[in-house]
Image (cartoon, rainbow, N blue to C red):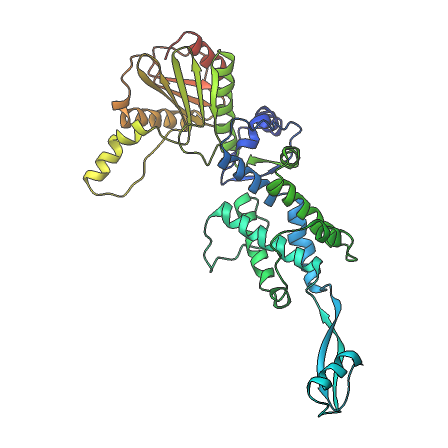
Length: 419
C-alpha cells in the first residue's frame, strides 16, 4: 500500500511540530536533530523535568560514545600504576630491603632471627583515579537506566544485531552494556568513589589513554546536569537532539494535537498547564477562556469516560477480558455544563478507509453516549489527510475534515462558542 505522504509533505509536517517535539516522550521515538529547539520548561512538573534530564543524558552522543566505544577499549587495555607493597621475607630476599623497618622488626623480636627482612615490592594496581572515575560513570549510568525503564529483570532477552531505533531499546542496550562492564573481573576490585572530585576529573582529563577524554566529558555532563543542575547545560542537552515519532501515523496524530493547541492559542484561550506527552496521566494541556476551561487528552480517557463505557460494562457482564477503547484526542469543555469533542486521526486519503473510520467514530459515540449531555454539535471530528471535499455542517454529529482544514474549523468553532 503506497504512502499518502511524499517526502516533502513529511518534512513539512515534521517542521510544523519541531518546536513542541521535545515534549514527546513515548515508546516509539528515535533521535532527531531539528533546527528549532524550544527549551521553556517552566510549565513542566519536577518529575517530568527529571525524566527529560535522564533521557537526554542517556541518549547524548557523549554517553553513547563513552559506553559503546571507549569503555570496551579501556577495559581491553586497562590503565595501571605501580605501587610499593611491604612484605616480610625470611631467607632469600626479593625486592629492595627497607632497612629502617627491618631493624625495627628485629628489635621487637629481640634480634632472634637475623634472616628476616622487610622489603618493598613493586606491584601492579588498577585502583587508580582514572579507573575509579570510569567505574563511577558506569555505575551511575546503569542506575539512571533503571530509573527510566523501571525494574529490569536479571534475565533479559538479547537485542537483535540490527540497529534498533526506539529510544527505550537504546536505554535497555545501554543498561546491558554497563551491567556487563561492571562484572569485569578487574573492575570489580576497583574502589567505587562516593563522588567525583575536581582532582579526580583532572586526573581523567590528563590521562594518557585518549579514550578517557570521552569519559571526562561524560562525567562533566553528569555533574553539570544532575549535581550542579545548570540550566544552560540542560538547554544544550536538548539542543543535541529531540525525540521524533518513529511512525508517520503517530507523527500525524501529534501534528493534529499541536494544531489543536495552536488553534486554542489563536482563539484567545490562555494555557494554564502543559504536561509531558506520553508519560503524564490525565490531560496533556489545560486552557482557560473567561469562565470556560478546556482540557486536552491525548491517548488518555477522562475519568467520566472510563466510568461510563457501555463497551466495558458489556464485557464485564459476560466476564470477558478487554481494555477500554479510546479516540486519539478528547477535548473536555467545562463551561455552563461539561461537554466533550472526540477527535480520531487517520493519515489516509483512501475513501474506503475513511468510511471504516467514520463507522469507528460512531462506535465511540455509542460507547460513551452517557457522557454527552450537551446538544452542541459536532460530538466528534474525524481528521484525515486528504480525500474529503469541503462541506462540513456544524449540525452534524460527526464532522470529517482534511488535515489542512482542521485548524481553521476548530478556530471557528471556538470563536463561535460551539462547545
